Length: 418
Ligand SMILES: *Cc1c(COP(=O)(O)O)cnc(C)c1O
Image (cartoon, rainbow, N blue to C red; front, top):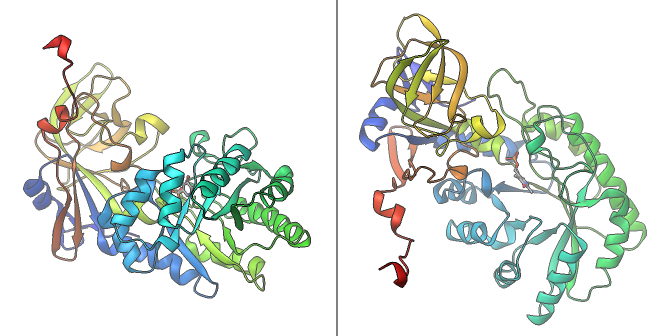
């Protein structure tokens, strides 16, 4: 469910015509819907209402401070994977006691920053990292709250690039060895064992991988209890999918219905780390048709947004629906929607049946709110897009469009070239 809908023949973002926003702020333009973001966040919060929980939004899906703040103001926290994300989360007003920190490559500086900030917990991914956090905490004369990220060896049945919880992946600790790791961790003096973490992948469209993974982790928690290691936080990660095309993924309520019965009476606090399922369908990327080009085999619609703005089609072969901002009755044609970047892989859609669009008109790339702007780059020296948030009739710029001077601002010419 989202609030990007046609009214008569015109696409609206909530109560504002998308065309009006494109004209005011220029293109390529990311537009987010406040109401959609709020609704998706509440869907989690309400679904798990009966169980103590914290919804830690996965910042990497969309690190815009306005987006993060919206969740923070409604009781949300943050799941971070770098010092930069910690900085952004704190700046956006996320309470430190609702921040969890995952990632296989935390540096000493990042660990220090997180310890100094007093985050809720580190989700630790290896033995060496345990030792490092213990060492740094010792030097700082503090105790580090940690959870171990468990790799439960569950196939999430998603794109191989976004599956994370199988034996062949770099993430987490193999579940068979988990007990041993916890025992070892409990001997490190500057750590406090507070949780168990897992995150098995992204864009998961079934309930069963979540249930299977949780069952495995709960057996571990029972074993830990027997060993006298009692766990306070159970962090089940994120990963719920969204409809990009015709998928019919479960919603948070379905997840709650299957998971809460397994958790009843355990006295745990549940942590969830949804990213995509909250922001994915709450954002669109608006682009302008620059040229039409008739190839021998098909039409090319050349637009002003490229793989530098939205890399998912190129990177994951992801499908994004593309809608004309002005809907007219017209013929459809088979076409590739491509960007201006000098790469064959620069496309937003391939072999797509689209309304026969005209030069100069606007198109909306749907479901672009997650891993859209956050994965954008300056490739081909293209300034990054602007971002706007709409709330009812109101709209506000939440990230200024980059300019040409931003492109050279960080460069220095060495003396020997002057
Ligand atoms: C990416 C990531 C998430 C969010 O995944 P979504 O599929 O966007 O919900 C949550 N937790 C961790 C550890 C992640 O790396």
